[in-house]
Image (cartoon, rainbow, N blue to C red; front, side, top):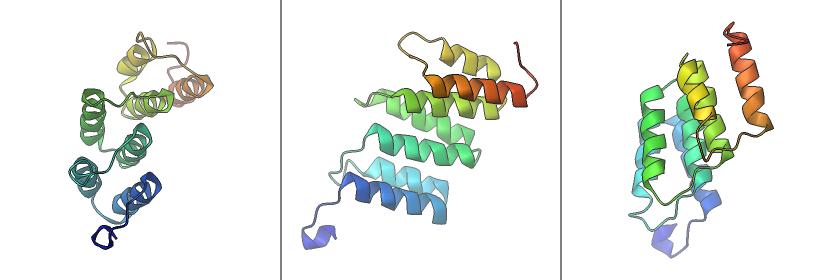
Length: 130
C-alpha cells in the first residue's frame, strides 16, 4: 500500500494493530506501534488504548505498564478511557491499592465508567467498602 503511494489512515493503522494483536504475539503489536513514527504515521491515544486493552486481556501486566509509561513520555494526553483501562487492569491484577491511588490522582477526572469499574472489580474481589 505504502509502496503504491497510498497513505495509511488512523483507521487502517488501528485495523492493522488489531489483527497483529489477535493473530500474532502481543510483542508484535507493541513493535508495530513503536515503528509507526519511523514510517511517518501519527499514533494517537485511541491506538494506545486499543493495544493496552489487548495486553490487559492477555494479562501481560508488565507490557501494559511499560506501554502506559511510554504513552506518558509522548506528547499524547491520556484520556478518561486510558485511565479506566489502567484502573480496571490494576484491579484484575489484584493491585487495588494502586487502582485507588490512580483514581484519586490530580488531573484525572473520574467518569461514570470509572465508578462502575471500581464497584464491579472491588465487589468481585470481596473488597466492597474498603
